[in-house]
Image (cartoon, rainbow, N blue to C red):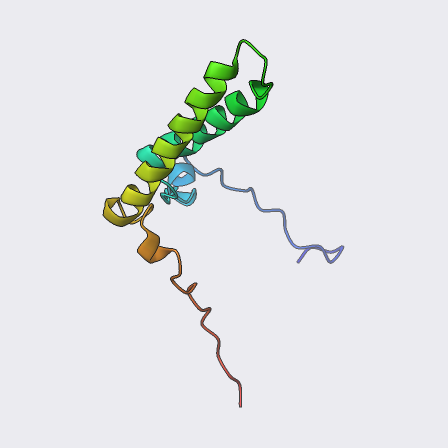
Length: 108
């Protein structure tokens, strides 16, 4: 301690680049959906948009409306099949898995 009561000044050591890189936690990617499921979702959004925009009966786009309905039906059939044979991120069997319970401790 110095006379004023303050602790002595210590020069702070600057970490090296390697130490800074090692101190940063690495990212761990968690797969939420696989590629076929992502393509399915965006294709379904597109077909619904086309169906909505071409919904006038007397419109020249009426053929697009019917086509988008058929494409949506094929997409839904694909999703049903993919839900049974697809990867674990798309499988229906994981739909109702209970979430991981947090670990708690009891203090007696």
